[in-house]
View: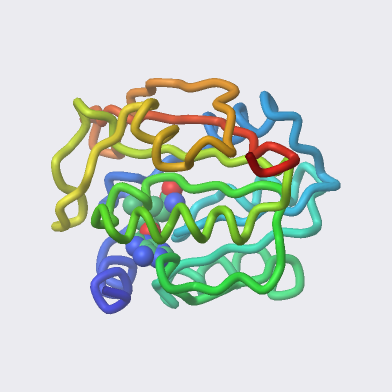
Length: 202
Ligand SMILES: C[S@@+](CC[C@H](N)C(=O)[O-])C[C@H]1O[C@@H](n2cnc3c(N)ncnc32)[C@H](O)[C@@H]1O
């Protein structure tokens, strides 16, 4: 699967990728709602070439990690933000074994590519990687969103589905249904949630 994404990033320009967005407005807004500050550590799952961590650097964050299957995308991020400023991890999130904990987990447009079994693995990894009291921001295709992306099938999620996937350790703080405008002007329906992990597991 990493080959698929390396080819995508090597052959399609930013303007040819449906998920491109100039400013990660919803992601940043939801971090603010959750009270995430520059003291917190953040991991961006399936970061691709997103400008998300660049915006966090501008806000003074210093403990940032990006994880993606595609080295081609990680190379661009390393060049853009500097090798010293952000830790990059080339990995499949469904097989990745975190070696530390993060205060915030961010995923825009990654979870929906995973099979139901891999989505369960993903949820396990969230619990391994996230500190007690930590937060998650997840944006995926909503039930009325696209049925495929980048030539791959997707699974679509309601806010309830996302809450059920994360489990009872998580309280949903807020949710948003947002229409993303692709670079060529079509619309895609996204479901976002912002959730907090309880300090103590149930
Ligand atoms: C639609 S793009 C979204 C990129 C970025 N989050 C953004 O908002 O611009 C999906 C990204 O997820 C990555 N990806 C897909 N499956 C993955 C997996 N199992 N583990 C890690 N990354 C994955 C792809 O390489 C790609 O960069």
